[in-house]
Every structure is written in C-alpha cells, then in structure tokens.
Length: 134
Image (cartoon, rainbow, N blue to C red; front, top):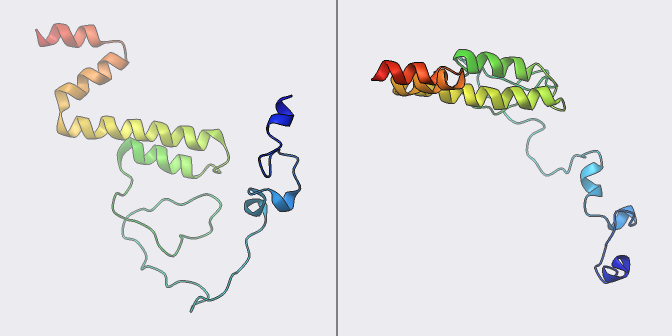
C-alpha cells in the first residue's frame, strides 16, 4: 500500500531509470566544459608557512589559504590526519580531535586558569583544582 501512495511522485524510488535519477550525474566522471581563458589557473606563490593538503594531491591546489597555519599539538594532529586518505574514518576523527585540542590551546593562551580547570576536569582532577582554588 505504501508503494502505491508514492507513485504520483515523479522519479520516486531508488530503482528508477538512471537517466531520471538526480544523483546519477554526480556519480559520473567529470568532464571539461570549456569556455575558460586558461588551461590551468595561475598559481599562488609558494607559501612561507606550512599548508596542509589531502593525501591524494601531488601538489597544492592553485588557490590555498595561509591565514591560520597549523601550530601546536592541534597542528601535529592535523598533519597526521592529512596523511590519511579522506575516505578513512581516522582522517575525520583526527580532524575533529584537532579542533577540540585547538580550542583548549587557545583557551590556555587567553584564560590559563580556566583552561587548566577544564583540562584537569577532563582528566578526573577537577576536585583537586577546586580544592586548590579555595
């Protein structure tokens, strides 16, 4: 009965003819569309700071950012993550961990006592920090 309820929806169902499925073009190999005035975009000058890139890339893309270079423990975690291919869970997990570590690092720089309390509470030593504050 549920199948008949959705028959009025054009293109309903995963078994639809691939020519009518909206996701199929994304599964096809990309092709050159033409119309650009260049074969490859002009490249930026080599960076003065480390820039991370995907493991599948042989060289940096023509345009990249150097606004926030990797630094500290979070930078080390990010560089390890970018050595792992993107389709592995470890890649994403390490980047998420690096984000959390980066937050702790920035809080340590701006609010050292509060950040120390956070680190100690995560390590199970929050009660010790509270006793030291009194």
